[in-house]
Length: 98
Image (tube, rainbow, N blue to C red; front, side, top):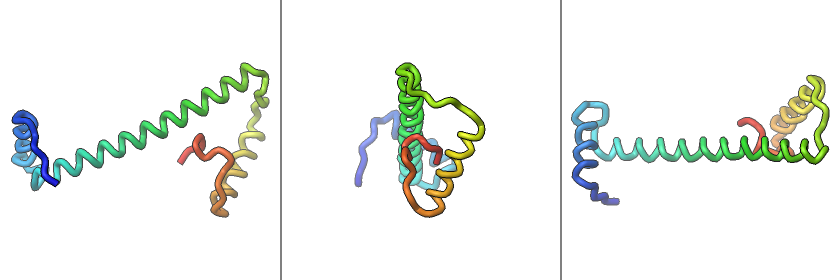
């Protein structure tokens, strides 16, 4: 792959290489891409988290909530850990922590 950067971006890339942090422009660009990919993954997780909160809020507003207790939370946690240990998917893997 060949990239043509505007002069300002090329000068910045070269300054990063000259600083000694990166051994080449390719290494710098690869790290930028990896960081971008990680940021996208984090944003997807954040979106799933807030989606889960919105689902819960809607359920509460509709009177579909379940009374919270430490025992209930501990039981849900136990079920999730058992499922993970057995390689089974959880009921809602999109809202469980990874």
